[in-house]
Image 1 (cartoon, protein in one colour):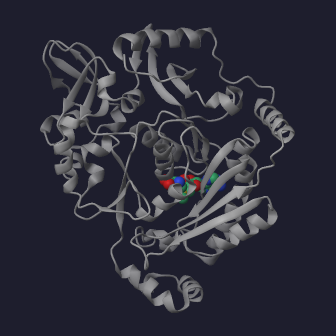
Image 2 (cartoon, rainbow, N blue to C red):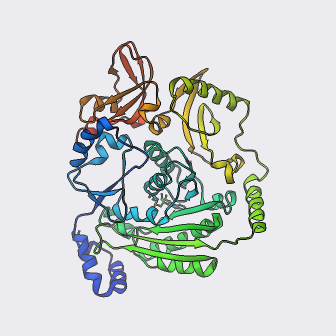
Image 3 (tube, rainbow, N blue to C red):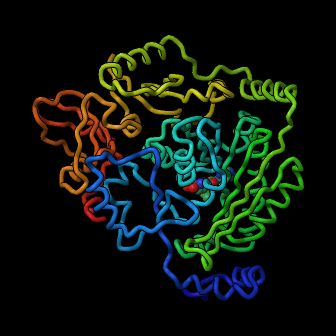
Length: 469
Ligand code: SAM
């Protein structure tokens, strides 16, 4: 891309900020954008599929991203986003610099974590992998359409301990005061690090837009502060280079909230590292320490969430529905160990992670848009259970009584991903977990030598999408 395409005010800012290094930075616009994928620690290839997987993945020309153990660069013409492993959730396509944020936040299994601006889900899926399925992740996205995409990615990667919400930061901070051990705030920004990847972002940039972004970031940060537990850690990140949205915003934040300590800031520059660029600041809230304070906070948190409303309850119909699922899964999924609070939304049965009850209660969800209330386990159809696609994606084939594996290099997996039914041995009968090289991709129902395809219609893909790597 030509430097002439960049706004003059932007290059002037860059020259002022980088001095002698500005030429090297601007030169980086002539290089190709970097592309990356991050393997999903929640999924693993079966021993029998390993050789096929190695062969398939070798076509991606992977090389490691230094700041993320699960992250790799891939090189054109590889298209890992169109391989069946992508549908199976083996990896997430993510810009390599963006992988630095969740690594720095360092979420741990068992914690209660918030990803406040989460769609499409790069950081959420990274956080979930680091949490290894334990604890609770609330992934929020203000725009409902983007929240749907987020929910699909959470589902594809087989994440069972995440709640996807769609709310304003202000609404969330009233419901969840001082609840979270860690918060990721990957703020909406002027996107200067996107110029190489998406030249349209250049036309949206202006000094006024930067000011608007900084004001919005400041608003969101204040809500994030209210939700962070004393002693908790927050990562603030952007994909922009502008000091107004990065260092200056953080400086203002720690001045206004003296109990917030800046631990470290990290900048990745495209002329110094292989990546599009990212800013991350890691901050910690002072721990107030005293048990009296903690008790008071706890009571405040309950009051804040209650607000006299009841929320979804484990009432008789939910209990009955869950009992039906338990009987079904005892016979069909002997290896399923998922536990949690059952919730029923219409005919959709969810399992809210156990960790939810530690510091939260279902009343806090009342009136909140929750596209995904934990793991979607089943649809209730007139006295029968249909297992949900999300459940399939969170299972290993050996957890189901019946499974049917398809090799990644064959034509059957392509037919399956297009939504076609497959011929199977007549002895196979009933709900069957379908997998590719041992990675679950959805449910089929076998009867009379046919495996009927239950892949949700919206996920079925066009032939052209899957036959190239
Ligand atoms: N964390 C995401 C990921 O890794 O895939 C990317 C998040 S993107 C940088 C910022 C998100 O903030 C967008 O999805 C955008 O819709 C959302 N957003 C926009 N305005 C917002 C606001 N006022 N409060 C909270 N989020 C907002």
